[in-house]
Image 1 (cartoon, rainbow, N blue to C red):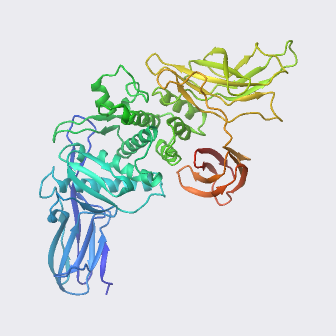
Image 2 (cartoon, rainbow, N blue to C red):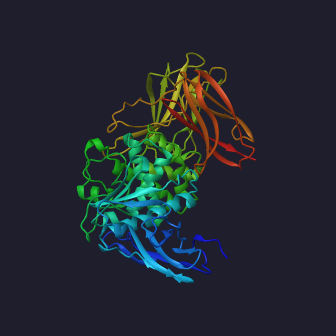
Length: 584
């Protein structure tokens, strides 16, 4: 005789109850002018159910149905039992609302069991119909679980917290997530609250609390990054570029839509003064925002549009969703959009780098790709001898290059403006200096001019000191984008070397041990962790208070497969990231 109890979707023998649970839900259409797609009497994955002796308040057993909505329970013998279906699944533990009647939240049936007994139950739209609270709650349950599976299986996000959320249903027409994941709120009454991609977007914010549990105390760039990432992942899950919301709507009329395929010049990261209100609202999906909101919806869509372009580029083998997820796990509340772009695009090959640069620069998210391998030499076969600069051209988007010189690595002067480089390397001879002689610092800046209010965006190379100190002399790498007109920075306002830094690892590539070196400007807490390309933490190298000065720590990776790994160091004031390559 089988052991009595709930079995999910098992086979019932002897005395038992089994059946299938179904529900109705809505799906966002491909065309923004179409009505929401209705799915009628579909399988209810992992529907919650329980069985008790008739008249007892204590369930005999409680479980979740199978992925196909099948449930079953073997019972200890014949008798009268109460079978209760609860509006919940294994992702959302409970649906709650003062507006839901008790018969909506649960449905109970009394059955006389004397052998195998079957009962199928279809939640349908509920007692209030398609626009009612029951229908919206079931819709939220279904799509939240679909998105949970997406993050966990398709993106491989193993750090996902499986603690169940609560879905709260209220009047209105929107959705949101409260701090601490305590409440996932869906307001019914209109198309927005029933859109599948709205629910998927908001569940993305639930996941973000697992990554960066800082409540809603986010700075402007982080808020925009969160919105853009949630939009992209919802679109990636549904495999089409149409995303609904935000904004209230009538029951049957269209809502404002975000169209990822159109996130080009109409929706740059930096706001443009010549946009029409209708295009801004319809395509960027933003309300008429005050300056205090920092254009976060519009900026987020610029980021999501760039990621979508990368996803759709047929000439690349880039997994945009995995890269975006990895970058999302590398942020702190102080991360800027330029740092986020750097984390998103780091360690890409030449072809991929060109694709990334194109999609980001046309949305004003950072400047051209950084010039690299800047070197300064002093030839012996010329008189007078002049410093000669060479660098690698990594950009296909630059308007040109600026060469800058300093005597103290603080006060910079422009000494040359050069045209764009079609291919190959750049070169310049500093005719205003002789060598050997005084100490100079040099940097090369790639810039891109725009005719609209976005102005000029710039990206600086590393700073090189000549003559070098002991064969070294390169200052910290700087990936900084500036906008002279909109952001309001001066031409020479490029970040310079700071005392505290993650210097990187040597050797790199390595097998299987490398030494990670870093320095601290002041004593304090230090956390140094290692992640793989899917964002899974694979090692903790430091997590304690440390004194100021230079430090090093070993990273042993004999147990890990070959591939790229992200070093992430955090102090009380700053954070740094650096990629290392394990080659076995």
